[in-house]
Length: 136
View 1: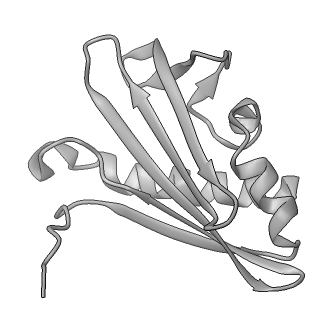
View 2: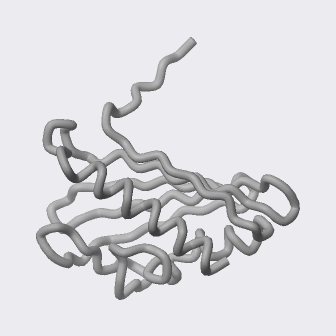
């Protein structure tokens, strides 16, 4: 059996939404809808976005890869310094009228550097999932 290393500090959140899979996935996978339910993204373009960091807003390259068959939405953010962050979402049909959205993010920092950041990030992601639910 192969073992996949899991970061020691990560965020894994989920929410159930009383809407069909197609309705939820359409919003989740649409890069231009990110500012509607996330707090960090603004000024979305075909190539990138503005991203709100603790140090201020920076322009990033943004790739949103999605597959409706699997429900996967991967967001790849490349910062001006070349660092890349990845966030992974998955929409799963629970019933014909209910969808579960799962979100996984492993901040690319050593655990000791996360300190207060990880609980704040977890709280923000929970709020964002509630915003997503409200849009569906």
